[in-house]
Length: 164
Image (tube, rainbow, N blue to C red):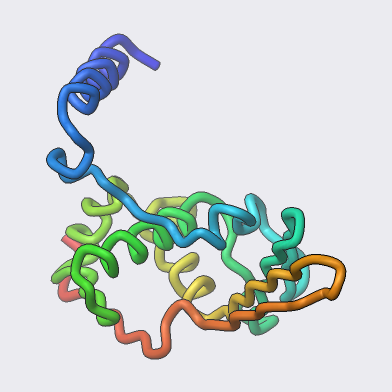
């Protein structure tokens, strides 16, 4: 990390300490289930992923052609979705007029190419919004099970005018 980035980070930390996260507009939210058991860190072979943490189990299913989401981008998207849903109190979320403006909200710098952020974001959005996520919590000796199965999006319509 160079000195300029280090200075910027230190300034931001001091600013955050000086004021409440809510007042700074830096308050974020994440679903409890996705904190207890996280998404895959790297690409998963197959179309099913399971992660268990104590009595809690997260299961993800995806079409074999689409694949499962993985890496930091789906986590970032879920944090943005959770935060926006809480802030707007609306199930319908607006990504913005352009891909660049949405990426700016995610603090991603838009760049193209095979391994660029634009390509990775679009691919991981497709994977995340196409998969099904189920959360299972089993309690006590009786094995009482609570299960929630959802898709991240019931309907997905995303388009952006021009990228830049």
